[in-house]
Amino acid sequence: MSVPRPATTHGTRWQIAPVRFAIRAHWAIARLGVLFAAIIGIFVLRELNDLSVVKWANGTHPLTALLVIMLSVAILGGGVFNRETPLRRALFLSCFVISCGHLYESNVLGTRWIMETVEKVTGGVNPDIFTGSNTAIVIAALSLGALLRRRFERIALIIVLAGLIPITYAFLSYTLGQSGGYGAMSPMSLMALTLLAAAKVLSFSRTAYLRPILTNTVWARFARGQIAAMILGVWVIGLLGTEIISEGQSEWTLSAVISFFIVTILVSGPRIARVERDNRMMARELARKVVLDPMTGLLNRRGAIDYLNDVSAPDKADVALDPARKVGVILADIDHFKRVNDTSGHQVGDEVIIDVARRMKECLRASDVLVRWGGEEFLILLADCDLTGTLDTAESLRSAVAQHVSWHDPACGNVHVTLSMGVAVYNVAAVPSVDMVIREADAALYMAKFSGRNRVQSPILRLN
Image 1 (tube, helix red, strand yellow):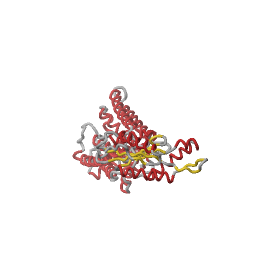
Image 2 (cartoon, helix red, strand yellow):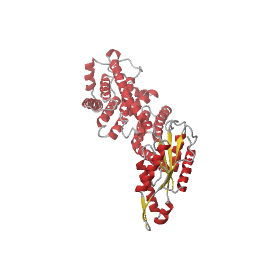
Image 3 (cartoon, one colour):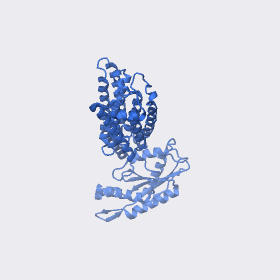
Image 4 (cartoon, helix red, strand yellow):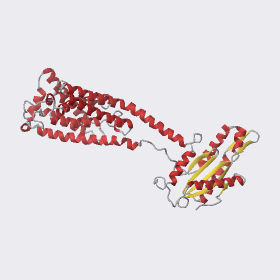
């Protein structure tokens, strides 16, 4: 038998379940990325270069296939928990340098030296197939984000999310029928990079920025719904606006809007999640204070009634008692307590109550429950205890309090505190209500008072 804990709205395991799923999903998506990298490797063979899912779209260049394979191996090499290794950093750094080099030479120098070098190694390629700037930007962003993740978590996540803009642009171009974006990224490259980007984003699932949105808190569910609605709404706007906005411009604008919105949600996530966590803690603290006596820290009458209802409820398997078991019930009352308050004041009376509660708690087992039933009255519940054991325990409590608890009377000096106690036993199989047993203990307590106080009284009518 233990003191009940206030129910919480959000259990810890329930909250973090989506986070654990995201960690496993990161591993699964990384493996799918490696699989698609292998498929791309097949498609870049010279005799298959003109095959693609969409006949009028750009094919996949060997340079793209090489970078995708390197990036896949680097992401997969971190395992489920995204471990840092020298090999992974070397692969990410190589992908970043090659991608930036390709961007520089193709957009500034106007040369194709890197692509031509890879073409020679792979045996040539269709001259109409090339690695576009969009593909290089995505790989550079994912690689740089991985390199910065350890020291600059927030910046790394923003960079990775920025890498989604070219992917979103290519996706919108295909789905909205804007042929101007077809050459930016081939369908096979788009699928592979989407998988890699998803795995890289989910690798942040244990960080303070992505973890809050992957829980089942109210804010997290709202934020996920907002992101989904934003993406769908932007796509619908793009579908309706393609006739008005110039080709290509709408996709870039909408892609940037989506990424900016997601970044805003994730960056604000830790602060909002912290506020929500504080609110939950405050609610739990308030619930705890409702059932606890503030002076002694014991269960109060309300908390005890809730607990006794649980004990006597047969449909609550987690707290219901075995019908063969018994619970000892003791009602204890401080003798002549009014004299303490009248003579020395309520502050001394409070100190006496606290001392009595502390002394009795020291004499009880961890499985027993001590309740401040009201005023100077206490209720004690003894787990697995018959009438004989209950009487023995009550006598031990009475003796301990009488020997060690006292108060100072200005007229008489130190006065020892005594208890009158009534006992009863709750038998789940025989007694339909806990209230009946408490009334029996109360009647025994009255007899103890009537018989001269400072004594333990057994029940007048025992309920077996």
